[in-house]
Length: 286
Image (cartoon, rainbow, N blue to C red; front, top):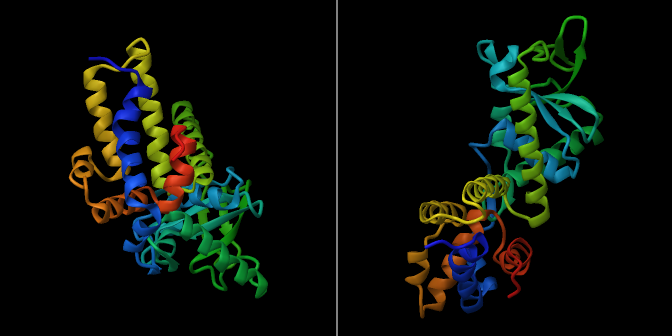
C-alpha cells in the first residue's frame, strides 16, 4: 500500500500525539520533570555553536577550528580547545570544550540552548567586571586575534597559539564544510522558531531531507519500505512508539507521563508541544 507523506504523518505521529494531548493534559505531564542544576556533558563544538546562534539570533557564529585542529589541544595537560567566529561580538574566540561541558545551569532537563544561554551570562558578567577578553587567564575561553602573516590565532589572555585551517585548498572539503554550516544554520532557526532542543531540530532537518529524497525517488509517493523506515525515525524523534501510546489507552495518568516523555525528548515543554510545536510544524490545532 502506498500513501503520501501527509497521510503518513497523520496516522503515525499526529494521530497518536494528538490523542495523548487531548486526553492526558499537557500541564500535568510536565510535573514528571524536576527543576534543578544540570549540565550537558556530551555537547559537541558544533552543537554549542548552533545553540549560540539560536540564543543570539545571529545564525552566523561558526566554528573555525575544531578540537583536533588546534595546537593548544595537542599540548600535554591542555584541554580540548576549538576556535569560533563569534558573530554577537564580531570577534574570534577560543573555547575549552571541557569547560563548556561542565557549565552548570538550572532547567528541567539537559539541553544545549541552556548551555549557550549560561555561557553568555558568564561572559556578560566577565565583561561587566572589566574582563573584556574572556576569563582572567584564558583558562576557559578567551578572545583571540588572527595574524595573517603567520596564519595563527593568538589568545589575548593566555598567549597560546591556535593553528589556522584556511590553508586547506581541498575544494571538496570546503564544500562539505559549507554544506555542514548550512545544515546547522537551518537547525538553529528551527530550534529557535519552535522552542525545541538543537538535537531535535537537527533530527527534524535530517528527516525532512530524507523524506524529500524518498519522494523524489518514488514519484511523489512513499513505498512500504519508506513508511516502515519513517516510523522508526519518528519513534527516534519523539522517544515513544505507537505501541507504547496504545498501551496508555484509558489511563489518563499514563498518557500524561508519555506526553511528558515526548516533551522531554524533543527538548520543550508539554505546553509548547500542544500549543506551538504541533500546530505550527504539522498544521494541526488542538
